[in-house]
Image 1 (tube, rainbow, N blue to C red):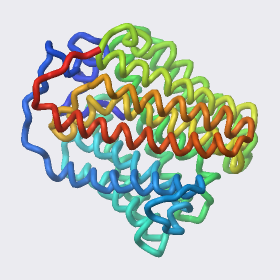
Image 2: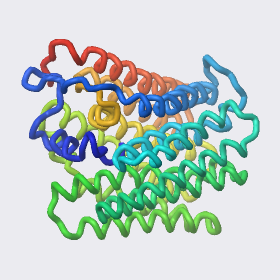
Image 3: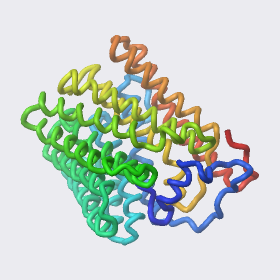
Length: 396
């Protein structure tokens, strides 16, 4: 999701997305040699995986559907669990790998442990302390990264990490999750935008790109902060910043060109562009509808951002980022389109029919298919990784 790590390389991401050497399972490109699995990194991924599964279980409960676990607390911590416990741990682990110092792993360890504590520790103070410590460690990771490469991408991502610290502190202090939505959104949107900035900086030689995106990131952070005291103004600022971010991505991101390529570059491009569309939907709702803390508008914004945008970007980057972190190939397969298409069709059903038209059955069916799409991608990715050593298949 964020910048490709040091031992996988932003170069790998650039080569993959620009199509110079498609990282597919096609006959022209055999999977990379299998190296020893870095077990400490793999162990740090386990809390993130648990957070994802528990978060999806909570989603089924909130939809009023049968769920494997029916812990009452799951519904209350659903949002924080998925944003900080799942996505936050992934972001922090990738950044720790990029840093290359052992202390950097305090960030994913804290966020992962905090995610588990949300569910298994009765006192919310424990989870709050762990999540805050993990997010603060993530901010600290960006300091040496900035010293190594003082670039707009690092500034934007570091600002996102600061918003993660704010979200964790406010949740620890008892602020309800709906009021944390701008903070959680800002964290992941700026993290992802910062990663795209790096790729755009290499691929697009426009001196205006960096100052514009830094200004947009500042506007988003300002909207989040203003919303604490003046919710209407804050929502307008946050919505405008999300739309500006989407416009920047549409103008400068290499995805506009990679969709005309083949194999993984094309798949990545479509997943990214679809995600940007949902980010614009969330921005428009905030800008025109004001603060949303309940009801269909809230449901639409939450899932446009965290399913339509964030999960789509995770799907897009998984074949590059996970092998870089775990040193195991995850070849692109055409079957990866199935969960991607299902995700966006089901989200359109949920929001356009379920939320906007207030059709409960469409909302429920769309939510069920949302969960199915995420699980299907996990299954396809696991199958692709497990069969990476076999005879490559032709890409499409």
